[in-house]
Length: 320
Image 1 (cartoon, helix red, strand yellow):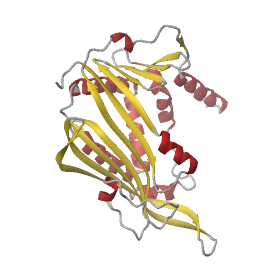
Image 2 (cartoon, rainbow, N blue to C red; image 1 turned 90 degrees about the vertical axis):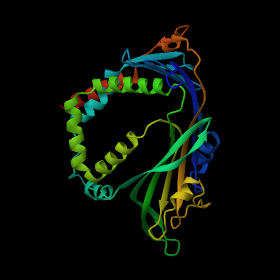
Image 3 (cartoon, rainbow, N blue to C red; image 1 turned 30 degrees about the horizontal axis):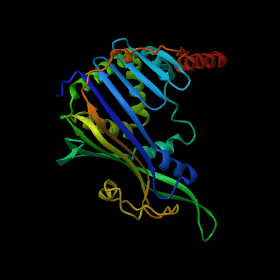
């Protein structure tokens, strides 16, 4: 039932470093890079639990409750408090494009290309039929290295591809309940922003990097028009030298070239981030779980409040 009023499901996320990179950090990520969350949704409330913490979103009360179960502490933060540091940064404006090095970087951003492909057919994922959409962001990259023969420093250029592979469905039980909550929470956040500041920020962003903003805008519009909830997704980052060909299907099959050493002359799948939801139930949820905890938990100051205080102190020190 897409209108089931109570929805509980799990989300498993995995990070996989490929191409032999990462060293010890890569080995640790590949070994321990999986996280499991349980998400509870009802009406204007959503709670996300992992092993050590809980995040409660209250769209009706326009607040966020963050709980640290190890420290037995929690803080309550209004959405106005959450967006205040971001608004403060917006009011400061975009950095000058006359700064050293900015123009060169901005030229590369303008060459960004985004494509969105809605594929035919469906696939069963955890008991529901899902459709597939693949988005590809193409841009330039530079890699500093050392020529093995001459020992001189060299700069290797090529293309960088970010691939977003999504499977989405409207058949999920409680789908309308989840979407309704997301809309309520989005409205709560948007109401906290000064609309004039948002407009000024968007205008400044577009003038500073028009190619990137236009390309990303088209992609977000395409992805925003897709109906359904994402039940499985993966993000792949791949680097391809100028004389090599990008093979999208190989990336989607997770069979892209993965050399054992750092080799800038062959296509390299840098990393993959995967998410999948499952274990969905529509059993009633005890509403007390959407409230701040009791039973020995101590309320502490929110980090956003401290961040805002530090920004204000910095402005005073700078004479602003």
